[in-house]
Length: 330
Ligand SMILES: NC(=O)c1ccc[n+]([C@@H]2O[C@H](COP(=O)([O-])OP(=O)(O)OC[C@H]3O[C@@H](n4cnc5c(N)ncnc54)[C@H](O)[C@@H]3O)[C@@H](O)[C@H]2O)c1
Image (cartoon, rainbow, N blue to C red; front, side, top):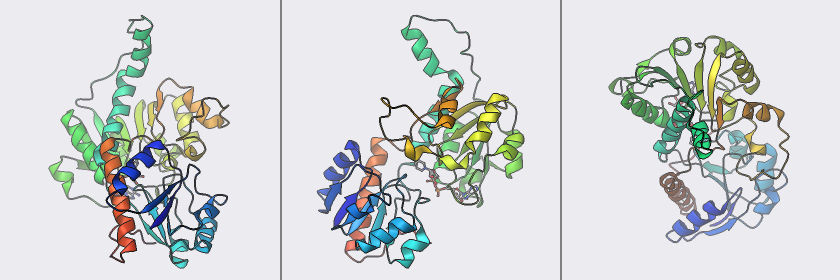
């Protein structure tokens, strides 16, 4: 199949080209994101392959249909950026990578928690400058603390297992109680209980109309003073303005983000020569108890291998008319 890849970087073309030897598709790597301006670039291809911040709204899908695109292959798990109803109406199938190393995201969640708690980002800079003072670097033992996980799917459960290894009490909420909750020792609770009990809250649910701004001024008011909040899922789970107010009032004492609701205009690009125009993002950066990474939680060699081979297999299955086990339906 001839596939146009949008939003690609060097590591995408390296991994996909290497693994494609076994699949033999014709891959065309484009750096630009998919949107209404760039959709005509799909011309002459059979499928497009897109990532987390590419836009596949109705207007874009109509253009893709005009270019006779039959398949959208998401090289990620989330599919909140695709209008599935419009795709189905236009006869475009959508496939994704439902599971790839959940350890990549769960371990990055721990990296954010440990860095914020033990302030290793600040210690690193201090020691480099010959400053060995400990003032301001005091943390707390994770052992015995209560961690609340919202979303107990693949990543939430792996995160729970790691936290259990630290000796934490894990409370969890999900719309569906997973069978593994008991064996992992997760205390399954309602959201209000989770907010009231947790010293650290970490988000592992998808972005849906139900979870949009699930962390807002009302839910923040129900949390413990001094709570640590971690989001490695999708930016719009958090109402950023509300969390900034909570940081200012010291209700939230630590914020770790790998995702941000307006990240599409920033992440995956080198903006170091630009003036960043997003004032809300810049306010977040001004707090020394806020740690932001640019959507890198998935970015391990193990996860990339999984993403690449499942994406290429999804495309081959479509080409060969096989059942699409990773199809996303409206
Ligand atoms: N930062 C990254 O690099 C990165 C990488 C992969 C995935 N993610 C994000 O992590 C999320 C979780 O991934 P996963 O593989 O664990 O997905 P998953 O589908 O295995 O688990 C998601 C869980 O969330 C639950 N859920 C759905 N709606 C909910 C709600 N309203 N309240 C509470 N729980 C709800 C589901 O029942 C499910 O158990 C993805 O949706 C994606 O947005 C981020």
